Length: 321
Image (cartoon, rainbow, N blue to C red; front, side, top):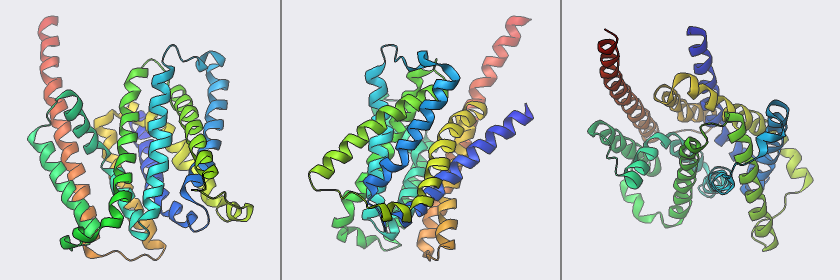
């Protein structure tokens, strides 16, 4: 059991570090190639590899949608079209600050999922969770404004890119929540088919945008300039993080796995620092506030789970006696 726990923790850690490093790597690529083409050049190979893995492990019967084709397309589109296209476009549009903002938005996924559940199912979060969400929101404000709150009034050009980041993260949260509808499928099957459907949709959108003159096709030399970036994005944030996170969370349980989301902004800060980008004290304070909020919420969720388990254990012991 201990070895299994350590293996799950290792997978969640690698996934979180990969996602944290993803944004600085993408920022370098955007100097040579547009975000939309960067997205499909990254995920078409991922989709192909996942499909081959699924075929080899589970056979052709695993490609049957079992009447869930529309739902599979919807959730795949939320993750591999909405999330991937919008988060990288928003990051690129925000420039240097977009790297950290995209990472912060990514780390807020647990909080955003709570708010979505509150909206769609009227499951009001407890006071501790609401307090954590408030702290995280303050942290994001520090990162966005760099301590100058009055700058919010002059951020007209940044509002749409920041909204794109928020929409992208909501897309991934919806995709994650949608996995419950495919509980009888393996993590590989859900990942492979949703990635295939979502990447196909993203490719069609990018080709239509190209035909309309909104997006430029990258040159061969531009693609060669980012080939190492693409290799990293395909192997780590693409394959290893996607599958590793799903397997790791299944071992650790979500309440433990989500704690590793803290490593996303931390990794981003470390990588950007190595690349030579200086951070302001307000950005560092904002990051610390977000991480603190995530940890407080995780502790609150752990205690809630423990309170629910203890009564059930007591019932079982009494019935056995």
